[in-house]
Length: 140
Image 1 (cartoon, one colour):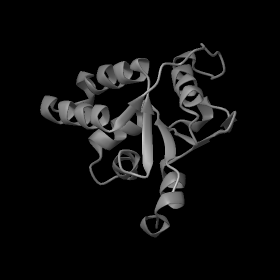
Image 2 (cartoon, helix red, strand yellow; image 1 turned 180 degrees about the vertical axis):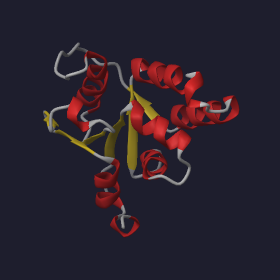
Image 3 (cartoon, helix red, strand yellow; image 1 turned 90 degrees about the vertical axis):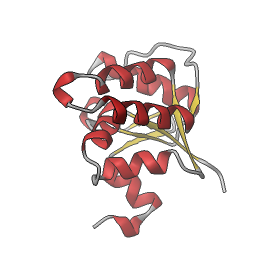
Image 4 (tube, helix red, strand yellow; image 1 turned 30 degrees about the vertical axis):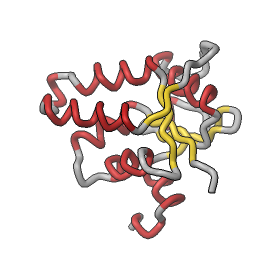
């Protein structure tokens, strides 16, 4: 079975940290488990670290460190070779750059309106759509 190549935007990771019973937590766990492969760039990992540390999110330091360690241990790092200017929010281009470098099947995004529906062969989908693809019995 071929691995499912995934990139997660920051909204998914933050929601996974603040909602322990939400679909985003399931998405993060699925992304870190074979046959899925989670892809990151250094820029994305840095953004995860910065955003998870925002005081207004009230994510305990221990939980934040556990999340970052889980992500680091279960990800494949890529180095995007080009800068893109595609998304509505310029800060979101790093996710398309990573998806491009990883040849990702899916970019799971919390704010889909920031992204095109596809970028090359990468489809931009929601958490619910990913779970519907990999574990349809979990979606109500």
